[in-house]
Image (tube, rainbow, N blue to C red; front, side):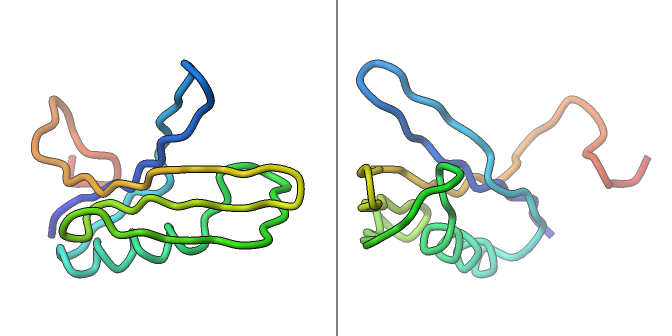
Amino acid sequence: MARWVVVVQFGNGEYYRVEEVTRFEGTPEQARATLYEVACTHRPRAGLRQQRREVFRVGNGDAYYVHIDGRMSTHRVFYQLAELTWSTGAVPGGPQ
């Protein structure tokens, strides 16, 4: 099975961050389903009081742009799916 990661990109002005939301193994269909679930439920900031969320699919479903209106602020985040294609060492949790 393939190894996947869902990353989120967010920021303000010239400062942007990219963070891993989750890592997992699965088929491409399972990976896209996980990405969609994350885009619909993940909170990019602790304590965020969501009032409204819009989720927009980008391309073939390997990325989502999400607009979140909170009680005190608005967040615009980008979730993307990535498949592990190469690694220099043992994969955590894999055979030694």
